[in-house]
Length: 308
Ligand SMILES: NCc1[nH]cc(CCC(=O)O)c1CC(=O)O
Image (cartoon, rainbow, N blue to C red):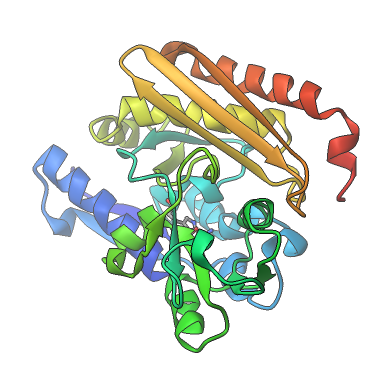
């Protein structure tokens, strides 16, 4: 390759760490030097809006719009994302088809006064702006107060130090990638605190039909992660990913077998519906869609109308 491959990313420390990990894997897979790549940070609307929950400001697409425009314009060649921040429907001409081996998908608790959520005193404050995490905390500990917490990982940890809350929940994967694993005081079990679809997996978006780039990316794609993500994203897509209905979903792959567990929950945590489905890994997307149908049937149509 004579020209440099331009790697688009958000500018946050976590996003940059993910872009650098992608570059390192491409260098190794293709025997290339750092000079063959350029990491291009792009500011997105999601980064600029800090004063309200993203679900109110327009949802997930806010973190991707400007980056996808750059990809379509040819200003960058690939875009590195946290898969869980990606909408299920992409702009025409783009695909999310490459996934790096998944990090630990679990959520982590970072406690200041207690190491575990179970040990928090009544009325303790836990900071989170994620509807899923808020609902799961309320389901588990209705006596705990959930407070708004936005900003990047470092900002949230600083708020915790300032005493704005007794604890917060962040993705284990993000903390590890930032070298901040030591702040974790407890790991949330997958069954009581299921992660967001896509959590822990770096996804790489590219232009459909860009053969050179597709060849480069094929060498770093992790097939089991791709299958797990196909299942989780099909689940999300079939539930329509309404920003107001918290959705969790996690698939694990073991050889040819896939196991999926999904959950939908009311924002107040009082009503939740779970689904578990096993099947063949090569039918990942169909299993995710089927799980969505089944959990929707359990919940009833009214469940989704309740919290618009
Ligand atoms: N919405 C922000 C975001 N997007 C991805 C991650 C973590 C890394 C990952 O899940 O891959 C985070 C921070 C967090 O939830 O703690």
